[in-house]
Image (cartoon, rainbow, N blue to C red):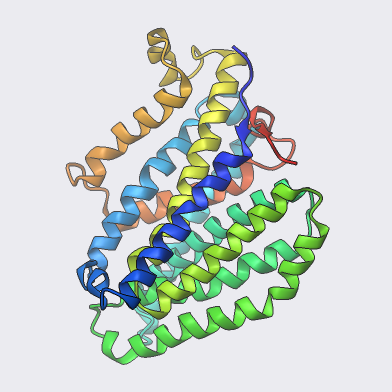
Length: 335
């Protein structure tokens, strides 16, 4: 069996969720009188479970990749620091804000805001980081574009979870305006950076991916302005998670070709089935995450937050050049 490479067209194709969602919103506004908007859930609890459903299999899958001697040996020291940081940051911050009793910065609100910020940082830095890779250009302009999405996105995320909070009536209009107008201003301000990235891209693939990221920003602003919160969350989340799953599967497939499955505590026992990684990897992680997403096993908001922080920090580490993970990752069609 040959080493597998991820087709560029597949990763670009995940962005088709953007015109699909934008088309639904546009038709709803122009022809349906907002019927779709009225039908969408308006409680943050629905979005919370949505976030866990999408996030958790993703987190479990990334953990799988660390369960081998090579990774444990290479990442032992930074992983220890990451776990300590992931526990101390939300706990210490929430307790500090609760002790200060500064409205609206209560412990829960602070933790939601922090979760929103690190989640969006993780999502957009990944997508623009991949864009750098395809463009074969490490310009910091890509980071500026990522930040233009992170800051207004954090306000939108916090606004969503404050929907039925006691402070909602007072702060909802302010956060809604902040989310949209700061997002619109950021997008306009970074247009020169989009142009710089376009001109300096050494491949057409890098330019196409840049256009896809720009379309995501525009569609997200439209969703925020008209309060289609589900679409505002779904678009970047689906793109991010599908991209990540594709990368994980590619890594697992190529690593198994070289090392087999015997050394892995989960793949090892299942290796005798002869099931390829592109089927086995998502099947296992969804099976493990299902009892939690369905409420059969309760992990609580705090534990989920800590697991998410560990995952975000770990992913920023393992895909850097020179790491054990990176050598099992390959792309094709980047021209």
